[in-house]
Length: 457
Image (cartoon, rainbow, N blue to C red):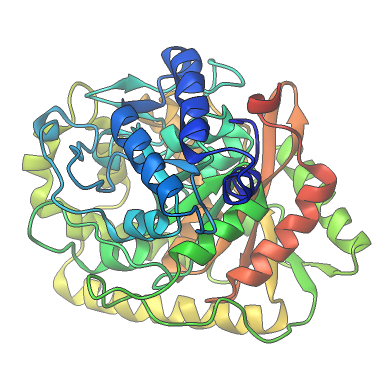
């Protein structure tokens, strides 16, 4: 049963073909088999998951995600369970309540089966390696990273240890592990899903409020759609979340293809993946046009300057929480983009609006953009923290993810095949609150191109 899609799992539970308890037991057996090899799930909630599954069965299993086990990134709270952020200092930091997205998935019938690994405090790099739990292994090839920072969830979903994963994305942290692990991932519009990213009583500053969004990972785009429908909505715990309809009016089936965003270079394998997806969309009746994305340099520069300015005052304390070598990635980032003064920070808030406007005008002509998630193949684990050259390669390769996070736009990462034993994928970016357009196009790509993940091998 662990190899079924989330939609198949929930349908089987609702129909009585299986029970939520049996479904959870199947996943627990899969975790016992696989997790010692890949180290993706940091805390298995076996007893709790079985108890919740029994309750789902008693209640009649009516939810759209009835009985579906899901993992939760170590930075997202599960009530009564430590939310460690991968740091030794927070190993006993027990959350009193579910974070809003965990609560919403539970309300749809899904069952949290464990926390999943991430880079320490999400700051130690793109590779999923935490001070508390160590390295997570890419199930396709241990010589390359599974990505991050939601890498534990990407691996858990890819290997069938969970039907869904819940991560977050502020510059590719859902989309990159999706691409590197051969699964699908959704980065929603800022304000689409309610969230709570406080570490302690205080809310984060402006950039962290705007750029970080929670999002699901799944083995199929159809499963992403189920998760999207469960996660969207409002919550009194997050005034940013707005009651926007799940679908919008019909839009022209026109796609801008940006295989090499900004002309900074793209690996031939990645370019071929984008071209393959473009061909599938064209065959399905989409108008496909080559066009570069707007305001890329402005977005990347402002994103780095705003976040580094907000982050610098707390760095002396945060540095001590990252463990051995965990500080290197951020210190390289700070060396590249240092903090700015108040006047410049205020100017950058205007740049943010300008970038959003440039994208809105572009997407008025092209409702979808097709491009790479990462413009290079998956690198070796920790390359971004090892040298300036490695740091530049990784941060440059994720540039389209960074820019679209800065603009607050939705995007769906979808795999397109396997090359030299490793999955490759693309992303489809859409207008604000038009996740429906991204999901529909991604489903077209997946029907033709997507391989089975390791879960089915």
